[in-house]
Length: 110
Image (cartoon, rainbow, N blue to C red):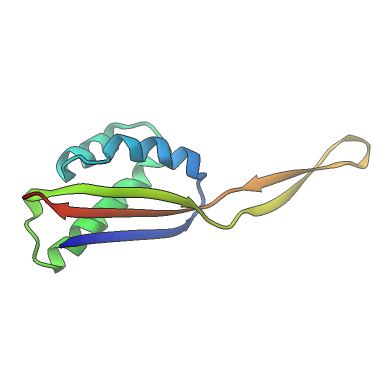
């Protein structure tokens, strides 16, 4: 049995999220939450909230909360917002504001 939580269209780059996801993959949920709480990255509060949501989903499926671990966690790029920055001599540079789709899957250890 597994519990999953998905967060779509988050306004943070997938590269920034991937660094933090690598820290919590295959860890028990209490260690993963402690790691996220102490990691000074922009993605940490977002992922902490997402892991807590997955734990609540596991509680709805009557899974043992003490035996949960982060089985899968991945990020995929979402839609990119394109903006224009005016530059000298009438030119315009493109600014890409990237978004992410984040998925966290929890499973019980046997």
